[in-house]
Length: 200
Ligand SMILES: [Zn+2]
Image (cartoon, rainbow, N blue to C red):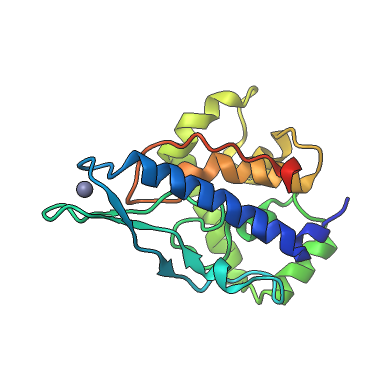
């Protein structure tokens, strides 16, 4: 199985393009709280991911602020790249914690070392899948698609293993799309953007 996408700049541009498409959809739909126009209000992030392939664009979370005095609320679109406030990019968190269906042990170990992921961080992520994600509205919305039901203790590998993409990169993209509802706390709508890794 090929994991070269991790070091392929096209993979990062592809994810960025999806985030831009999602952001454009959110902008066109106007403020979710009052219906007014949205103004761009991106903010910097310092995501951790493979070195050497991330660009300055990968360090910006696309976001908007409502233009109406009295509302001015932030509307941060869901993101295929940033898993909420977590420091590491979403796909890293999936790949490292999806024990049986993600990377090979050797490749996972390489990633853990390259990204300096501590055992505590790894443990926290495993705990997050089981104790937070499994109770989230996001999971409640999609769990019905998985028949027979999945074993929560096997998250996220069990989810990744059930997806139908042709290779790991495609299944990863499908997974990231499923996670979109959990990636923003200041915007709760749904988006129509379809993630199609074959376009990469
Ligand atoms: Zn507003």
